[in-house]
Amino acid sequence: DTGVSQDPRHKITKRGQNVTFRCDPISEHNRLYWYRQTLGQGPEFLTYFQNEAQLEKSRLLSDRFSAERPKGSFSTLEIQRTEQGDSAMYLCASSLVIAQNEKLFFGSGTQLSVL
Amino acid sequence: GQQLNQSPQSMFIQEGEDVSMNCTSSSIFNTWLWYKQDPGEGPVLLIALYKAGELTSNGRLTAQFGITRKDSFLNISASIPSDVGIYFCAGQLPSGNTPLVFGKGTRLSVIA
Image (cartoon, rainbow over all chains, first blue to last red; front, side):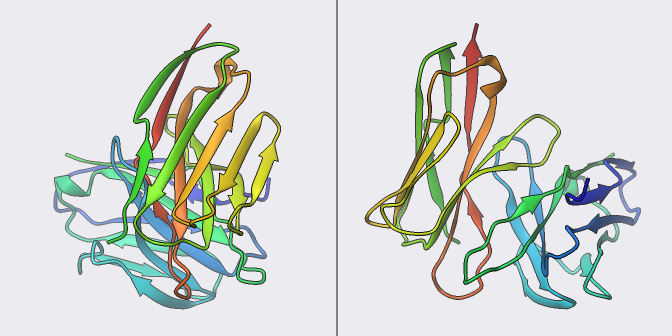
């Protein structure tokens, strides 16, 4: 299967701990997105990369959050000093833009629970 | 930030019935995408629309890009139990490389 892969699927951590999530996009896709989703809401944009360049960050992305895509392939999202409000599903998506038309394909997400 | 108003919030229908849901915005979009999400999973792309007035089908699903570019609808014909889930619309502004904005979803329940 060559879809978007996210690891881990679930993460339970204590408040104050650091966590890191990984996303492997579809191989030929040059854009990679991170979204966050809480219960009863649609996904909310956090940040995105075009190849290895981080092009935009949402105001939702506090300074405790950092994302990298070092070689333009996989990406990591790190949350430092986690808070209970960080509990959410973290979704990664990738896309290939053709003639300004874009389709995002999502992974299965990482469900984070901060105790 | 931009907001998409998706309606209805939830609906209960009998198996075999047709379903219609829509999404509106105060801003013009140049792309509308419709997704379905099952519990504990990521959204799955159903239909992508790129031109005003465009009508696109995917099996029993049909979606249209509104003429005003501020709305879109999704129809599901002859619903079946596996149609249960949350349906999200997502739009992209025409101003360059902007990320998708999502609605809050329509939760569909199908009664057999």
